[in-house]
Length: 110
Image (cartoon, rainbow, N blue to C red):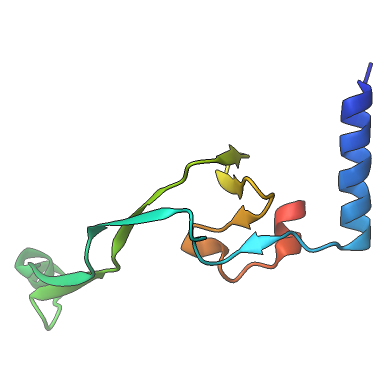
C-alpha cells in the first residue's frame, strides 16, 4: 500500500513535470560555500616516444593539460540520485559537474 506522503510527493512531482516547471538551478557556488583550490590549472609534456615509434606518429611528446581542481565545503546540502545531484538547503540544485552544463533543467526531472 502506498503511503499518503508518497502519494502526495509523486503527485506533486508529476504535476511539475506535466507543467514543465523548471528546476531551480544554481550555476555558480553560493556565498556560503567555501571553495578550496586543490591544484591550479596546468599542463605538462609527456614522453610518448615508444608509442610514436610504434604508431608512426610525427611527435614523440604529448601535451596534457588540466583545469583547476576545486574542493567545495558545503555546510547544509542533500545529495540525491545515482548521479550525486547536490540540492542546497533552499531547494536549488547545484550543478558541480561540467557534463551537466549543457543540459536543460527538464533533463533532470525524468
